[in-house]
Image (cartoon, rainbow, N blue to C red; front, side, top):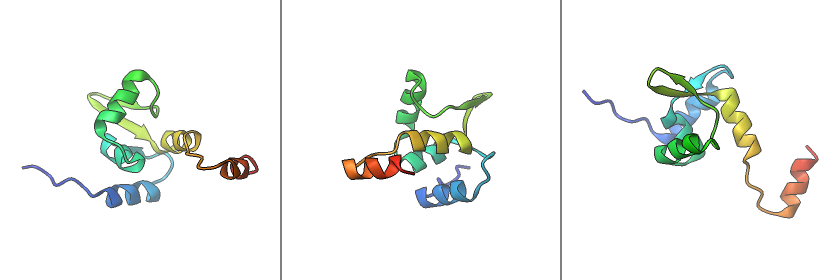
Length: 88
């Protein structure tokens, strides 16, 4: 029996409520990054993605690694935003 995929909102909420030591599936990380599974796979292959753990055939991501990657890859929309981030 096939399970129904969880909504993007549900996956993001689970991520937000989880402790820093929690690990997440590719589907959850794709929802957080708003990208496809293929993009995550390509980033792993190129060595530019979020650090991951292989558990047998499964790929998992630590919340702490996701958070750090997101901080390092946040979009700057203007020079004034960049200055405000530098002052934090």
